[in-house]
Length: 375
Ligand SMILES: Cc1ncc(COP(=O)(O)O)c(C=O)c1O
Image (tube, rainbow, N blue to C red):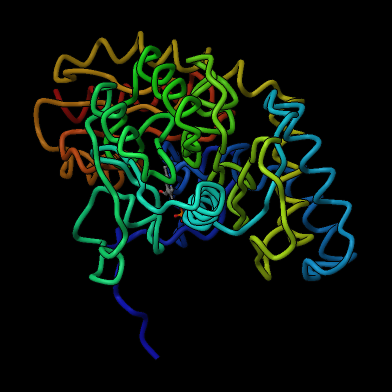
């Protein structure tokens, strides 16, 4: 059987990984500044991650959500403490799209309404309501386009107020910092005003922290740079360092009812063990402090590259915008300098999403590689 060919692939085959590095089958070593779309948070094959997963696999790998699983409570408690979101309740699922799907569904259950307000260039995943709330017609099939979604520009509060005034909105969904769309973000005033109008109209505000969360922005959640308190927060990518998992943090005011949300695999023992190990390491190794230090170093050093027009994003969720399209540069970085980076829908933007425990030497390697390629 052949694979359904939906991914354009680079011709690299990683076979092992450690920290910020991966190796291919010829033992060529690559510096990973992309973490497989911002997933590798505590570094590849971190010993604590490997230990907890192996121990868990030897004990019990899976049982469904019809039995007691204390690992879920341990995960929820550790996440609440480390994120400062102890007042929320946690629903566990398996991916980012599934987290947003459940968040939107919950909002619709709560309000009895169905229209979604989303933002230009948003990416929220590839399933039903999540893809409908994604501003990319190419990945929406006719079945998804039945969903009512209104896309607004970021930072225009009058338009948000106007839409919520129609009294038919189930949810406003917004990324803490846009990922695939190109690292744009709302201003603090905008986030605060959106929160204000959502509160006033009793429309749940969903913060998609799937990419920007888990310390990547230099705070546990990117919205914490703006001092707001969303009703619902969605998480996935960095949550278990590559083990599939997603989650929805739900404000206390929403009441759970049996059967309202559900999943077979979500919150399974192995996924919880992986997610617990990530929280342990973010705390123990003070990774959020490291994100801020390494980010500051990056922002200083990148100034030496004259072709860089602008650096967008925060922490270790960065977009380096050049005055040319970066596809060739990305290829040269991989095949000549052995460095992984990412692209965005803005073709001139190079995305940097490294493990959160990367250090200044790794950044220096990248800056030198850029200097040599662009000289
Ligand atoms: C902001 C954001 N939301 C949702 C998703 C969807 O996550 P997943 O691919 O795990 O379904 C992504 C993935 O890139 C994302 O960046």
